Length: 465
Image (spheres, rainbow, N blue to C red):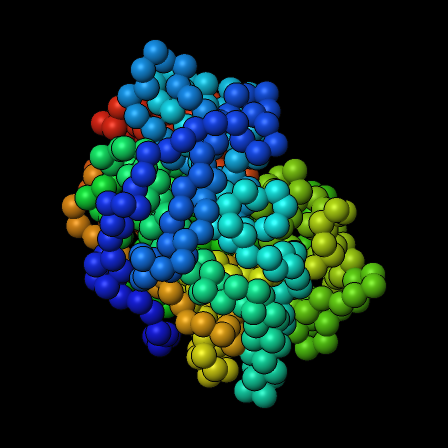
């Protein structure tokens, strides 16, 4: 098991918002105007450090689409993921179509720009760092290379930390969940209705752990399991989930006359690139990078399978450029920098020995992909992080009302392990590629709207859309 310093859930639950910190909201025009959908905004002051509720305050900017009913029956709070995306601008764009039309017949739709997000155009107090995508580091081969990676990661993180050390240390999803609780109070709601897409699903899981008695409805759309009691076991299961993308591809390849590659060819390419990275235009790819880039194509389903087959065939001849993503994507597997949310949400190994044990387990669980495509691969960028994990994965508490999860090939299996902990929960499955369902799948949206509005209309587990 990985040993990391964390703030215990019981201690976190003991922190409460004083009554004076739950004012009513003064709704008015948003900075930059309402756009075409009539969104309105309000600001809310919250502690930068929820362990010091009387200390320094920061600003959260909230956005609201009013219900089209004469009187709303409550609010649904929305986070679109990111993890620090600019949700008010996203609400302006998504709300302009039919995305929330059905739900707005009964409910107000509320979102907020998360604390500390990118400079432009986030409206809440930001962390003024250089937010960009950076190349994921390669797997260290020994303790010396692990130490060099840790030192490089730490040096990059400290540059961001110096901008605002207090906010830098309070960017985990549990802090965002505490912000959500403050928003609930300011809205005057007795319980939360929350829709969390992608990374927003981790915020939702943190809220459910911290404030189970305040949950009315929670939707997890296109997310993974951050609620595992045994994190090493969950990583192995997640690796198996990811491996199925290549299984689907090779199953297709066996029946497709134009496909001339097989699992043995794929494994030879990966092994060769791990020994000596293969050229790919102006750069090179090692085996894990080829796995990750191959997964980009495999996740696209049959529409991308032909290109993946050609890329593998070309790499077998010594040229890995077939895996290079098309512009404007970066030509390598990337992670967000600085990872101030991710690196305080997810465990990462403390030394090379722990990392190698993790790699061996995941290779055994997922022979085609190993740790590629999992959070463990992304966490290579967090080795050496200057502050410990603040929001460690943990099982959900007893007593939660039924939750609803929506997912496709990419997330359904992992998120199923979240809702399996809560009796009566339901799930919506789309048998195909993609990421999140609510905005693109009318069937899923209708079922999610019914659950959020009525609270008792829980789709059966595995409902297909």
